Length: 264
Image 1 (cartoon, rainbow, N blue to C red):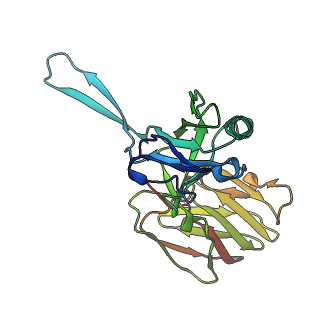
Image 2: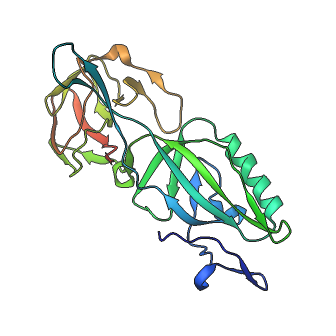
């Protein structure tokens, strides 16, 4: 999105920005389960969303040795994301409703915007909003800041891939993802995902293996999750990267995979 400084002009109820640009109602963000920003008459004038995360590296100085040793902790650090916002009328009412809704969304929540429709992030609302109010309090601007996990998750990666026979799961992202895999069948069997194996020690109808949570459970529809960690055995939970072969044996009949692809 092109940077647009908010220099206010008014033509009736319409807000016009400098150089004739108008606040576009198509520019918005959504956070957690709250309505998107348009519900609060909040529109975006700028997004600072393109920063690349920092690799978590530790430097160690060794006496008598030139240069530093690098210890790579195998992770990326969080990034800050900033949305510059404008409320065009009824500032106090819209702003207060917006703040109440934001404060109810604690912890990491799903964050989306109109500029990057193919991806979403997981972010925490930082707060510290300093609004600039104009037109006798009727309109104003402010920045909303989020502390986000480094991943940009593909929405396509939320779609379940159903395998009724062994096959490949593929994505062009270079980063390994932590899938949610539901195995259907009965009895015992082995699930092979790339070079990793999960032994199913007992199953009545289905078991979900969640690599992100490092957990195994049985959950039907929206019912409660039943712990099934004792019913599987795995040295490592499955990981997907590039083209990954998925196969199985024993009492396993089919597999459903939510891959959770992501990029930086």
